[in-house]
Image (cartoon, rainbow over all chains, first blue to last red; front, side):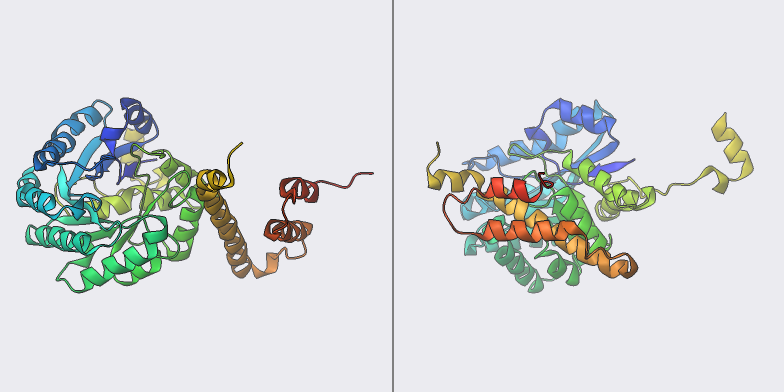
Length: 286
Length: 79
């Protein structure tokens, strides 16, 4: 199995994660910028953080044969500080030239305040102006439905390319609204909150796999990168083929992220030996 | 022992997660029934056990020993 983990916070995890992910078929991870567990005070702290995820983390992943990509943003929790967020935004575009940076994320909403909404709009504007992909975080638990609908309201008022926007952390009550408006929708599998492997497989069966991404968003909190593999196992147990698994867990991330040419991992298709020309089949067996 | 508020704080998300999982399983069963109408299993004895368990869970009596009652519901008969 070939797996792309499209939402993974590597700096919060040990090298053992990389080792085990490599052993389980993960070929690439993408790391959005996120909240550090405390509110940062200085713009320079963000800029160093962006350097860490865009310059240093790829070297750690490479030790295990995994490609590492990243995103830059001020996360919604810290967007409440307008001065700080705007100082960071003013220097964010410099990182778009980095060979592994795919776009702006995770921006989004946390409590859906007016400050958060303003900074979300500014992130999306910046991304569109520079032809970048966008990854949008939607709130947790009680705030999920309201916040997701608010994100859609905000985007509806903007001039955006919906194919290039991924709205993350959808659940049963928000996935349809996101897909209906033409965005990519991400499901995050956590041990307790967000989705479970089984419910994620349900949504894949109900909606099909077009424009759906699955991730673990493993970070410094209760989380586990291998909830993604648990979902693959659940999907297989229900009789879905290897190719269908490949479509969901490798090819869809490759399709979305590949809209940025820096992400050069292409969708792949299994081919059986009897489909190969005779010479190729002989060559591959020697 | 935890206080009632501490129990809520500690286990509310776990309850939410498990209830959602049960709801999703019921939905899954319904979708399977719609997809395979000739293979419906609506008279399977396990449905009755689940229904009886849900009634126990919905009980608001204190000291209801819900876990023990559910364990008995899912136990075979005792001679």
